[in-house]
Length: 452
Image (tube, rainbow, N blue to C red; front, side):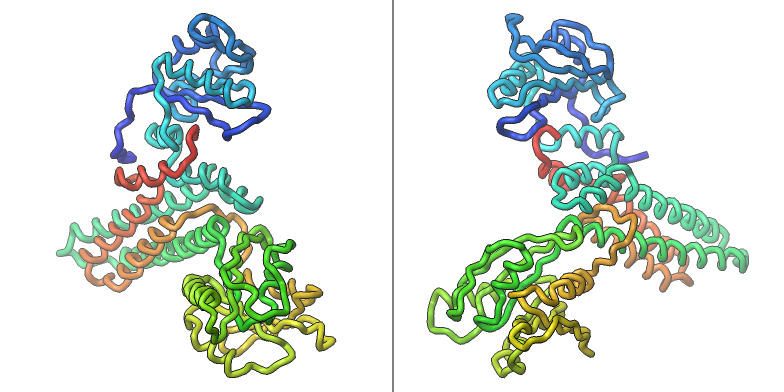
C-alpha cells in the first residue's frame, strides 16, 4: 500500500488548462466532488458521462458566455480520480476568464500549479515518477525527449523500479528466514540463492541506472563550453553548430567579451553551447570580466572544447589555458581552420582519453566528427527504451546502488546485510512515491503549470 502524507482537500478546483494568449481552442478544467450540479448550472443540462457534448456555457442569469464542447468524467474514471468537468470553448483570454469566473462562482477555487496532477497522484491514478513525466512531456524540447517522457508516463520507468523492489522484497524474505534460525546450519542452496539474487538485482539496477542517466541527458541536456585564445574561431564554430549568426565574428581579437549561450540539438539530444571570451592577458576591465566568467563557466561544464589554430603548434599560452582547465571535465582539442591548410576534417584519439578534432568552422569540414564525439563524451549511447529521469531519480538510484554494493560487503553479517537491503528498497520507493515527504511533493508539483 502506497503511503500518502498529504491529505486530499475536499474543495473543488478550477483553472484554464491551455496556454495564455489567443488560440483556436481554450479549455477550462474543474476537478472535485459532486460536480453534477455545477454541470447543470453551466450547461443547462445533464451530460452523459465521458461523451463530448456540444453545449452553451451559461452565466448566472442564463446568458450564453460561450459555446463549445463539454465533457463530464464522474469519479473515479477521470484524470484526477475525482469528478472532472472540461469545458472546451474559444481560445480568447476574455471568454476563458468569464467561463472560469462562472466556475468559481459555483464554489470552485483557483487551482494551484500542478494541483490536478497532484490529485491524480494522491488518488493513485499515477505514481510520482509518472506524475513528474507529465511536466517532462510538456517541457520536452526534442522528439526523442517527448518519446522518453511518454514511456515514463505510461509506466515503463515505474515498472522497472517496481521490479527491482519486488526482487529486493523476495531477497529480504529469504534473508529474514535465514536470520530466524541462527542455530541451524545454513543450507548451501540458500546461501547460493541469496548470492545469486543479490547479483541479479545489482545487474538490473545498473541497467536501470544507465537508462535513467540517458533520460536525464534528454531532459537536462549537457553544457558545452568553448574556450581558447582570441580569434581562433570559437564564435564561428558556435554559429556553425547553431545554424544561425548568434555570435559576432571579427578578425579583431577580444570581440567576444561576455558569455554567449545557444541551445542546439544533436540527434535529438539538447546541448547548451557557451561561447566565451578569449583567454589572454588583458588590461581592459570589461574583457577581464568576460575572462573571469569564462573560467567560471568552464568549472560547471560537462564538456570543454579547447579551440586551437590548426596552422600553429600548441603554444605556451595554449598550455597555460590547458593547465587552468578543470582536470576532471572531459575535453576535446578542436584544431580549426584546416581549410587554410587544404586539409580535410579528421579525428585523432589521444592516449589520455582526450580527442583531437581537425575541422573548419568556415566550410563545415569535420563537423559531423565533432557532433558524434560530443555525444560520446557526454555519455549518450543511443539505447532503446530510454525513459525520462530527473536528478532526484538519479540520486536515488545511485544511493540504492551504494547500499546494494555495501550489502555485498556485509554478506557474512546477516543483520547488516538485511539493513542495507532495507535502505536500498527505501531509496527505490522514493522514486515512485511510496514514501515521500510533504516538502518533496510541494517542490515537484509547484513547478507544474496551472491547469495540470
